[in-house]
Image 1 (cartoon, rainbow, N blue to C red):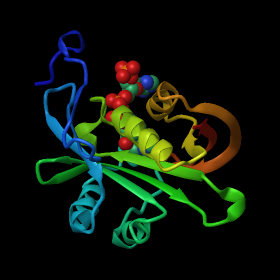
Image 2 (cartoon, protein in one colour):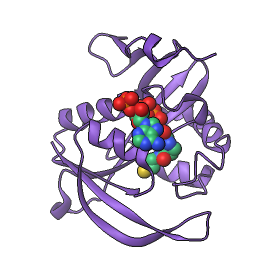
Image 3 (cartoon, rainbow, N blue to C red):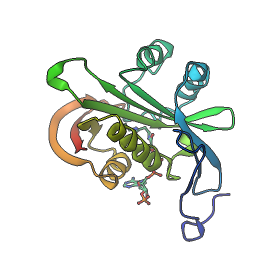
Image 4 (tube, helix red, strand yellow):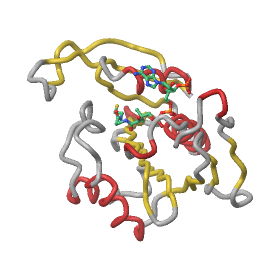
Length: 191
Ligand SMILES: CC(C)(COP(=O)(O)OP(=O)(O)OC[C@H]1O[C@@H](n2cnc3c(N)ncnc32)[C@H](O)[C@@H]1OP(=O)(O)O)[C@@H](O)C(=O)NCCC(=O)NCCS
């Protein structure tokens, strides 16, 4: 059973490996996760995470998140950054920051984030966004951007919490499971 909000311990983070990118975190329900940069050997666990996501969790996403897509995301680990959250052997969260190679887009990256439904609303998304911003700053990025369906209030809450600003609305660009078009919000963070 999940503890009551008032009893929930504050998300507690400790350095996992001094000077490294791995971090151990205790989620609001007491479970331990590790935040780390993706490595090739994580691929099957990442594919499994997306394969196990519920239709509700992907309601505001852009499926399919199949093996081919994940291979595309992870094919250039020099320019693009994949951050994962591990719980024991499982991958339970994924954040992808990607750049286009044009000089006119120097330092400008976009990102997407997915947390498995068993680990949502426990502080993990906020923590992964914070870590991504830290890595982007270390790597000299200038800006992070993203697009989110306007109805995805939890995601927008998280993005604003870590400093993203609403920059505009793209009207009726997302065709939902409800067979209706939804607006999307463009958001950005200058680093
Ligand atoms: C959106 C997502 C990344 C957020 O990560 P998360 O780990 O669930 O979020 P966190 O627990 O860090 O934070 C959620 C915050 O939103 C709040 N929240 C929860 N439901 C909410 C809602 N319906 N409306 C507004 N705020 C809400 C929580 O109270 C919490 O805020 P608090 O820390 O101030 O209490 C994650 O839920 C997810 O992957 N969802 C499905 C896929 C998705 O939508 N990805 C984004 C596509 S752009």
